[in-house]
Image 1: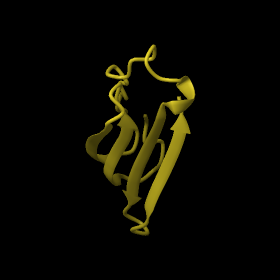
Image 2: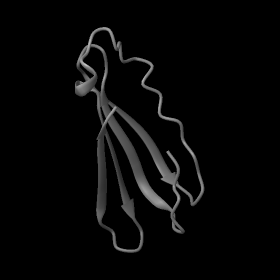
Image 3: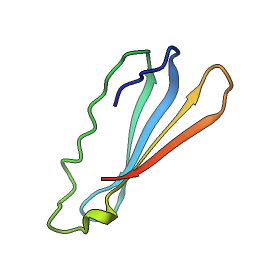
Length: 75
């Protein structure tokens, strides 16, 4: 994931399920413009889950408006 915007984003966090169907939360904190963080789904056993069930949610706050933004996608 890359913050391709011109402004920092705050309280960035990622939610996904592990192979035991437990929600995993990764707290990334603040991401500066141009900063890149790798998202590893290493603990997801793809033999154990249907690929349509691997949903990742990325959430963050923008300093300019204080609103929470959410991007949800299926891997």
